[in-house]
Length: 305
Image 1 (cartoon, rainbow, N blue to C red):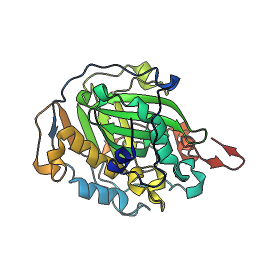
Image 2 (image 1 turned 180 degrees about the vertical axis):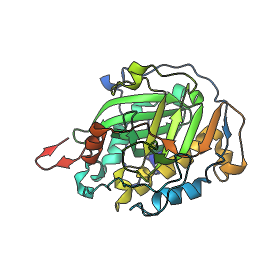
Image 3 (image 1 turned 180 degrees about the horizontal axis):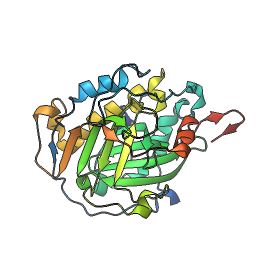
């Protein structure tokens, strides 16, 4: 059962945290089952072609207009076109309503199973980027053993779907600037991202890779929510950098939270700081989807979805 201390510990505002216990509904009947196992730890390493996290954050975020030269494994070139910034008002997003994030955390709390997930470590509202480059608003629960991505409707205040990823299955975590291949026609993003992969050595069948609705892609990619660039009371809960620090601390062990670069861990998961390549060359559908923020629950004039 959740209580107000749970949400204070994971960084949510203390305001409007009258958390009461609730029993799982039919939304939670599809809880995935997995075997309990001790997490084996991770190996922390830096790409030789990139800089430490601080430099990556600076290159990705210091100049939102894209006027600085972008270095990295994807090409060492200045982008000819820059991805336009979101122009939505803060009030357009239903997630920014007073107490909305706390209410979502309260209603979705039953998906966390103590014997499978362990203790709750943090809650964020981030942008998930799927394998077709489409952006989607997702509520993220990071626990001691799992990463849970939830599709929560901030309009009707209902949990629609969720996916559980076991941390012990991660083989690679990449933290760096989101980039497109050299021959891509997509504009530069200039955003920091986090990509978690599992079974990374396996070849993805063509039918799965080219299916925009496929749920069997062995990686997940996140970046900051658009609300991070706006003046809100819960800024850290929309910040991909805050999420990445908590994720690495959880995967590698709490003793790496202060100086992860000097405390490598032995194990099967590698943590790399390098550009994250999004394999999209001329994704018109995704570009229109993202430009209109169709993956976010927000007010759109007389229509809200």
